[in-house]
Image: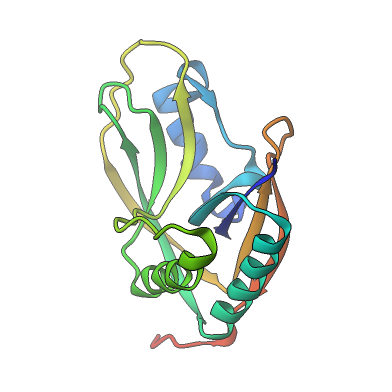
Length: 187
């Protein structure tokens, strides 16, 4: 059965230099089974798992409604971090600077979809861009959390993706949902 998730797509060109640098410094390809395809880079909003056709239709409707209540916003990627043991984390990622609009969108979607999915969204939300996951050896890979000059982009949509684990890229856009087109940014 096909699994789905909602996410903010990340253009590879924006993060290419930071991913390449991290990959070389930490030898990610040598120690991790999964290095995402450049077209698969994203910030997950909600993972849905398998959906029935009627659930998928309702998810479409609710994501569309949520998009009409969301203004485009700036987003900054500002570091490298990890989940798990620092000497060999299970996931290495690019961190996303705290962003109230992104957090608000996460909660809006979670609230709107809770009854459809029959589960609440996780209370803790750590937006991130996975660059390596699933260790393939036990060799220590000491990764330290680090920050860099923020890479900023404008977010104008969210995407519903389907997952095909046997393909590369693994994620296919099913539908994109444009936000209200004016940015509420005080530059």
